[in-house]
Image: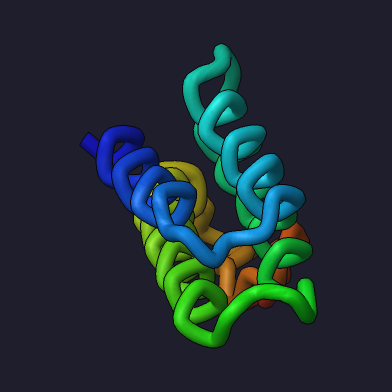
Length: 117
C-alpha cells in the first residue's frame, strides 16, 4: 500500500507541465528505486535524499516544491512508523540500558541513552 501511494504521488508530479526535465528524471529514478529489490528503510532514505536535492532546484515552481515536500513528509512518516515498530521490539527487553530513538535527521538516527536503576 505504501509503495503505491508514494508512486502515485511521484507520478502526479511527473505529469505536471512545468516540471523541468532534470527534476522529472530524478523523480523517475526515485520511482525505479522504489520498485527495486531491497530494504524499504534504505529505499526511503535514498528517495528522501534524491527528493531533497530536487526540491532545492531553483527552476521548479513553488507548487511543485510543495508537492515534493509533501512526498518527503509522507516518506518520513512511513520511516518513523517502521522505526517505532522496530525500536519497540528491540529496546523493550533491555533492563539496564535503554537506547531510545529520539530523532531522525536525514539519514542520521540519534539515540538517547536511558539508564534504569
